[in-house]
Amino acid sequence: MNNLRQATFGGGCFWCTEAVFLEVKGIEKVVSGYTGGNAPGKPTYREICSGLTGHAEVIQVTYDENIISYESILIIFMTTHDPTQLNRQGADVGTQYRSAIFYHNDQQEKLAHLVIKELATHFNNKIVTEISSLATFYEAEKEHQAYSKNNQNSGYCTFVINPKLQKLRAMHADKLID
Image (tube, rainbow, N blue to C red):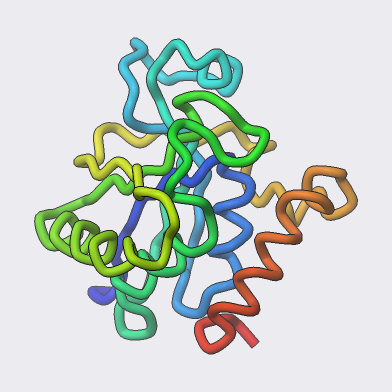
């Protein structure tokens, strides 16, 4: 178990980001939650959606570094959402939907800056992804965990999550669970 590490990302709605990483080899667990804000106590989904707490919807992944590297996880994250949109992803608008990498240590911070620099030339617009130290991570309510798996027939899954998964499969087929 010494090879298990954690990474935390915000890429818009956590339902989408969670669905992407549940497909990746070496990902042991994905938890939807909130971080990066300043509300007293544990924030609720309703509070986060108001945009008043400053928190971002994020996922926290536990991964096996013997199977997948943090750098590979960063590349998957950066290429399965639009890191050039400030405080939004598609129709989801507000600071709670910002693109963000919340690093757990100095090495993750260095790799986040490196990967963003390397990928910058692949985007037409400037990357606006926030890179911040992880503050307190709050696990989201139960109904937000494994959302796409539990709600496959919902319109959100059909029209928003499924296209993201198709993009993931096209770009990163070698990194996915068979």
